[in-house]
Image 1 (cartoon, rainbow, N blue to C red):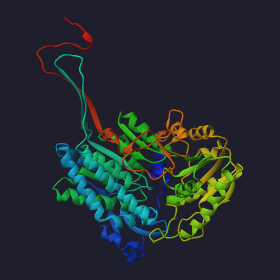
Image 2: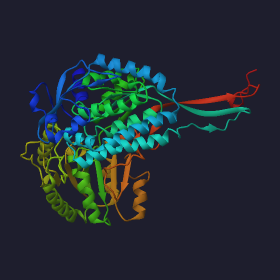
Image 3: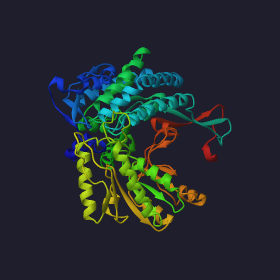
Length: 537
């Protein structure tokens, strides 16, 4: 099991290490004029990957690569388990001061973090494009998401509160009170290396928690750049830097976080298989886990749907971020009367879209690379399996000859709804088109997979809208109507059911996961009545 955990925790959310050891200095992208923004973010050719109030590291020196051209960007010295221990200890010490600050004062710090992120919005988005591989508008949008959740958290800092409840006993007050947990651990994935950390850290910080972060091993430069911005805000306010610590590293660091009782909560974003191992380790010590795991998301198209909207939505839902979102549409469940016309239109849309392939940093590009060679390998293996099971590739299906890690977005028809390959999430731009006889059948197919993250129905029928939202409708954590499965807003809680893990991050009442609740009874009389009218005298 230790060998398995070493492998899976190092590659959270199916992200292998596009990392090698040392190279000649002149080869790094950070020295090229096109990538000058990297130095603007405080990055250097070699960077320390651990921060607990000071920057240090004692682990392996690794190289981060750009998936668009396979060129080295810069190097990072990772942390060790001992370095993580120093981070957690410093975080515990910083919490002593942080928890004593009024919540609105903590909100003011988070507001300043949001402002600092705004000032670096474009270069941070460019960094995401270079290191993760998503197109620049999506990279900038991801940083904007962190800014937005900071704005949300500022308001939350003046609204977090408990309840005063009616007591059955005269002269008694019954209430609920919320307090911070302490240092919380956050492990994020490669596909959203900024936003998911923002969801967790902004809310956790206003709730009174300090944060220990381990980013994805293949996007360490993003983790360092974000931490430097948070560091600058804390320093300006004479606060301990360890309010927000960072420990870049591999499986050993992730496993240590899952097992460490000093982290009462661990938020983990990654695959279902890895999440299950993390949950077991955290539960073994009776800690809390917040899991955001895999998705096998479907769009159902009812017979009265607006076809133009369907095709436009499906294009972004299926190929946006090169199919590497947790909420990417993996299955298109089409009413049989619309199947052929939608497939025809979608194939045409894919064909037109491919002229927008290119370097994610370049203006006008809409389709970038896969993040890793492992992602490309998963794409080719899944295609081979799908075709062996009888699937027909009606568009795409090839690895593109390119200096980077590019594959063709792919549409597959002809497979049964319960085919093993259809029921398994492949983190690549592959969509299976299924033909259903009715909405009820489509809902059944939507719900039959083990994952339960996001789902969408396209319909103009009001009755079907409420069927879809009701107890016999979609069983997912995100249920949409006439919009894609991806592109969630920060105001609602983000997360899913079943094998997606059940965790909720970002808005709504997700803040409750970062605090502990106490039920409090105050007797303000000289009498001592017992509950339920019990007499003990």
